[in-house]
Length: 335
Image (cartoon, rainbow, N blue to C red):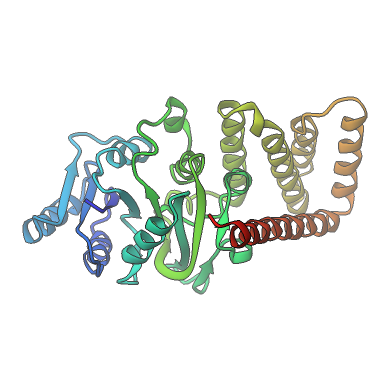
């Protein structure tokens, strides 16, 4: 089978039908399955899924849990049961708006065997009306991204925008289920096997609502959560990634220190400023330089944003230059 659509859901009776309809609406030149991993809901979610299964028995394959596993166990276990060459993920409270999404992503991965992930933009919609719709796109909107960038920043909005090459990850490491969210580490595990392709299209609506896992968290809690995830990456990945991840943790701790400073919480601002110095992973003169930098940022916060923007621009320029060099080499010498 060419592709699997993996939908994970729990207590989403009001929206699960729209997610399934978006998957059914895909126009493709290949066969695909829709795997719906229902995590022992207490509302009508399961019965709605079964109704769809009865209507589309050749397309929809439910995985009905006998007890609630929780997202961090339900998602990876369901993923390993997908039979397609590629797997497109879809959260049960999101939905697809483009009928060519599956075809375009499969075509991309077919044509680029050295890529392990293909993703696109998401239209973020706040259901309480507190904000207007916002397009979430990666920095620079470049056609190619790499593991090193993904380790620093979770720029893929949600699993609902991504398709991965199946069978690269044949089991999930024990540390995976200890994390707070599945998407970012899931993408990291796949990006270790290939490049990340980006299509500049808006094919997914990403609902932001109070019941959502991420939306329930206050800004500072999200930031702390992300620091914990990057620390896990540092602890479990190879030593070649540690300098990059130490710098990423340092930068996130400093961002949180500046956030608390702006909120007027001097105690927590001091705590995370000190943490950012420790996490930098330097000693001696290097540690003194980091401490001086943190001191300057804490007293002139605008410096941090200015430096961060310049670093991001340099990284984007370097990535573009590398891509251009590779393309020129390919034109001269062939693949």
